[in-house]
Every structure is written in structure tokens, then in C-alpha cells.
Image (cartoon, rainbow, N blue to C red; front, side):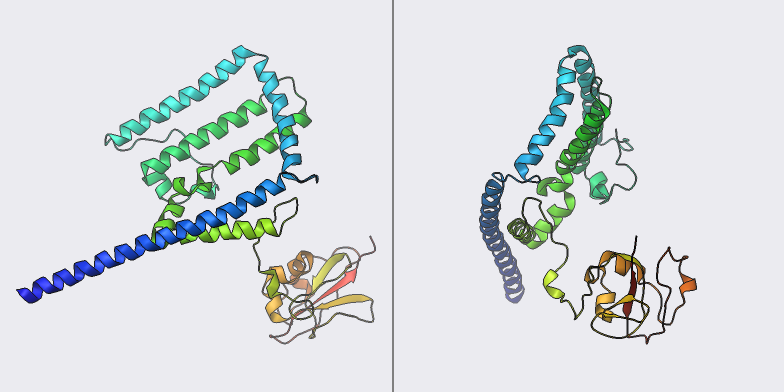
Length: 323
């Protein structure tokens, strides 16, 4: 009996120790998150003073002009504005009523609105299975649909202004999606709980890195650029690319007798679209020893030379465009 009590006490001590360790890790990560967030905030404040065409100030100014013109048209007709707002409030009331019915245990409560087909932001099952996330999802979709309809149906503005306003509105709506906020995204909540907020620290560090290496236009890193080197696993050319094939072995570029520019890339580079220029890699899809008949008919002035290669060798052949 005493041995059993000791084993139970030991297990409880281990659980308590594990919980304390998790809280310590969470506290450390929250401090790191605050530090990284401070860096990001400082960088954003500096970027606000930019004067380039893609700076935050320039973009905000253009968005204000386009959306302000739409807003002025609606404010000038209070009756229509009140009617439009009434439609939105009716949708909110319907959403609230159905949410209460679901909270009280009623089953098969249909949603007021559902994401459009192909909207992968809300594909996680918890967006529908968990009422908290489902409520924010539907509230966002209702608001986004209403704002787009109001902007699209605005009278008294020209098509150019309307299209610009819709463009900026879509960017704003996408930014305010609940999927972009940690506490209203079920996937982020699960990751945060399982990693003691280490995922948030990593994400904030990535944002700080991207801001540091961006100019006026934010460049989000999706590829490790340091992993590629020209002549080793990266092929480049100053020519316009019209049509490309794999042809022969090598590690540098050369010009053949027909005047075609031959770009040579290693097998490693061939397997990574980021390693080659987009046009060259898109065309380099012939199997080793393949024929040009396996591809669509070549465009005008494109090279049709294709030579056999060994399975482990890959190059890209392109002809200079004269157009």
C-alpha cells in the first residue's frame, strides 16, 4: 500500500513539474514575443516616413482617396446609407439568433453565410465545429460581403474610382480576416498551446526579418536565397526566353553553333522552381531523352533542338528572342 502511494505521489510530482516547466517556457516565450514585437513596431514607425511610391504613407493616401470618394457619395444620401446599414444589422441579428439557438443545444442550425468555394482560410474543421470560431467567421463574411456590395453599387463615381476602391477594400478585408489573428484562428490557437507560444515568437521574428530586408514594398520571404549560387545550382540569362528544353551536361552557360543560348543547371536546381528563372524552369519539363513532339507546338522563332541526356544530368536550352 505504501509503495502504491509512493508511485502515485511520484506521478503527481512529475505532472506538477511538467506543468511548471510549461508555464516557465510560456513566460520566456512571451518575453521574447514582446521583444520581437518591439522591433517590428519600431521598423513600422520608421517605414511610415517613407516617400517612395510603394511606401505605407503613399499607399494609405491612395486608399483614402478612393474609399473617401465612395464614402462621400453615401453620406450625401442618408436615406440610402441607413437602408444599407439596416441590411447589415439584420444579418447580424440573424447570426446572433442562430448562435444563441446553437448555444442552447439545438442541432442542425444552418449558418447564415458560408465561405466561397476555394476559400482555404476557413478549411479547418474547427471553423465550423467550434461555435466561438464559427461566430467570428460568419460575422467577418457578412461584413465583407456587405462592404463589397455597398462599394460595388455606389452611384456617382466613375468605373476607375470604383475599381480602385474595390481593390483597396479587398486588401483591407483580407487583412482583417479572423484567420490572421492568433486568438480567432483555431489552427494558431492549437499550435500556440502545443508549443507554449514558440510559434508566435518564430512568426514575429520572421516578420522582423522581412521588414528589415524590405524597402518600400514588403517582401515576404518564401525561399532561402542563401541556398543558391550562380554557376552551382542557379542558371541565369539576360536574354528573353521564348522556349526551353533540357539538352546536355555542364555547369556554365555556352552558345552553340545555331546561336542558341544554352543554360546548364544541376539536377538539384532543376528540382527547385526557385533555382531557375521562371520562364526557363516552366519550359524544362521534357523527360530525359525526350522529344519535342511530347510538348505543344513551339512558338515562332523558338529553338527546336533537343538532345538526349543521362538521367542525372539536366540543362536548359533557350534561343534568343528577336521579337
